[in-house]
Amino acid sequence: MSVLTVRDLTIELGPRGARRPVVRDLSLDLTAGRIQGLAGESGSGKTVTAMAVLGLLPTTARVSGSVRLVDQELVGLRPREMNDVRGRRVAMIFQDPSSSLHPQLTVGTQLTDHVRHHLGLSKAEARRRAVEMLTRVQVSAPEEALGRYPHQFSGGQRQRVSIAMALACEPDVLLADEPTTALDVTVQAGILHLLRDLVDERRLAVLLVTHDLGVMSALADDMAVMRDGVIVEAGTKEQLFTAPRHAYTRQLLEAMPDAQDSLVDPPEAS
Image 1 (cartoon, rainbow, N blue to C red):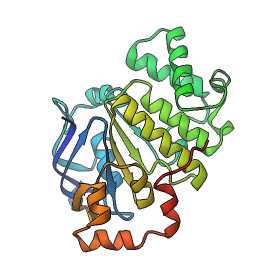
Image 2 (image 1 turned 90 degrees about the horizontal axis):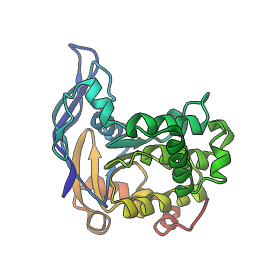
Image 3 (image 1 turned 90 degrees about the vertical axis):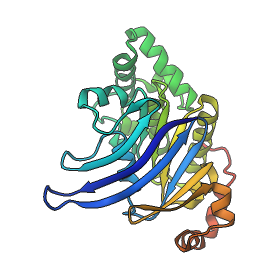
C-alpha cells in the first residue's frame, strides 16, 4: 500500500509575476519497506520535489497537484499543521548534516528536544530514546556522544547523528536528499548499509534523491529518472539498469564511472 502518493505535482519558483515551472506533473508512490529513487542531473528538480513534500519551499513558490500522506493532503496544509507532520510523520536527511544539526547545541539537547516535542516524553525517557537511537545508527560511545557538539564528530558520524534525529520519532516516510554525496567512498558504503537495514527493519517508505547512479544501484528498489522537471522514465531498478527505454536514462548509465560498481554490494564500514 502506498504511504505517500504524489499526483500531478507542479512547482513554480520565482517572484510573483515571473514564476517559472521547475517541476511539471510529477507522480510518484512511496511504499512501506521500499526505497523509491529519484535520479537526474543537478537542476532537474529532484531536491525541489522533496522540499515541496515537506512544505519547505519559499513563500513565493506556487505548488499545485496532490501530495497525500496516507489520508492527509499536504499541499495547502497550514503551517501549524505542517509542523506537526515534519519530523513526526515525515522526516528528511540532508546532503550536508551541518544543515540539520545546530552547531551551538549538543547532540543530546537536539535529540531530546526533538522527541519531547513530538512524542511528549519526559527528560529521562527522551534521554533513553536518544541513546537508543545513537546506538542503533552505530555512533561510537552513545552516552558520551550526547554531550558533544556536531563539530566534534567526523562527517560520517555526523550523518549517522542526522539519521538518528530523522528516525527518532518513528516517521512513516523518510526523504533522503543526496545523503552520502559529502562522504568518502568507504564511509559512504557504511551509511548505505545502515539505511538499507533501517528501511527493512522499520518498514520505512523512502524517497532517495541522488544524481549518483552508483548509490541508486546499491540502495533503491524502484527508480524514476528526472530531466528538466519531468519524469522521463520510471520502473524497478532492475528494469531501468538492464533495459532502459529513454535515451536520457541510457546517457546517465553510460556516464557511470566503473568505480561505482564497488558500491553495488558495499562492504561494512564505519
